[in-house]
Amino acid sequence: MYIFTDIYIYFYRYIYIYDYKIYMINPTSKNALTNVLKAMNIYDEYIKCDNAFNHTCNIGDSVIELYALNDNIKVTSLTFQKITTHSYIHPDICLLTDLDTIIIGFCNVNGKIPDNIGNLSKLQTLYLFHGNLSGSIPKSMSNLTRLTGLSFDNNKLSGSVDVLNNLSKLTYLVISNNNFTGELPKNIFNNSFTKYTIYMNNNNFTGNIPIEIKNVSVNIILDNNCLKITKTVATAIKNNKNIGLNNNNISTKVGNEYGLRINSQRYSCNPQYTIYFNNRTGCHNMN
Image 1 (cartoon, rainbow, N blue to C red):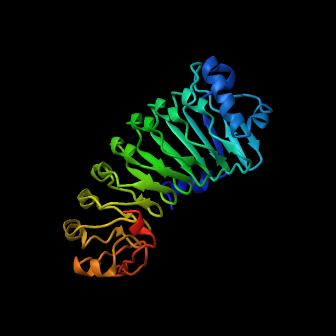
Image 2: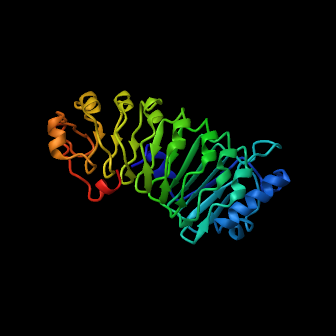
Image 3: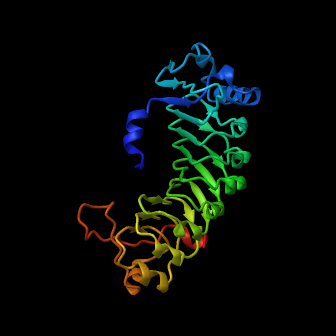
């Protein structure tokens, strides 16, 4: 489930490329955009469209909409969805430095997140979900200090997520269903997560749950990892109805000993629905 559900339902068939006419962009951005479209396997269809103002280019189940607001054309937003042919994210996307939004969802996109993604310092929204992306999160992402929304869910990404510690403006985080490892980044629990949900479930996170988790009042879903909990943290969150910790390295015995009675509204309409703790298979070999 995504926070942008209403928008997503309306736009799920569309590819939007805002604020440019390709022949009016500077040469570097023009070449970069051309390479990005080719990597996503839609360039041939795209060039069949004329580049008129507010022109709509239909490409199968997808649509490219072009907007030219003035003579200083900039590529500010790219969204690709439901592209089923084999594709990848071309590294030249990092040359489109006016981008503030990138959304690639439900595409057969492969390969890695470009190493220089951190060059996109104006980026506020980065959603790369339901694809086949692999490898680790580039270290350069620590430069994306304007980022407020991040989604990497349902890919094959792995490694540490320590880079998230530097993203102090995040208000939405979904990185579930990957192969991330290491400890949870403490700083994300000190950010402004006041409206949305943090999904980090179905990974391989290890170590103790940080005490900073008590600062967050929204839903935090950490199910199906290999996390442990200390008595101090358990005491601090034992009455929190918004934290999901099922199937970690926390046994029912430990949960009962620490007085944990964590309820989660996402599991049941009954607000008294209790999460049962189970040791996830293989966790002892990871911690």
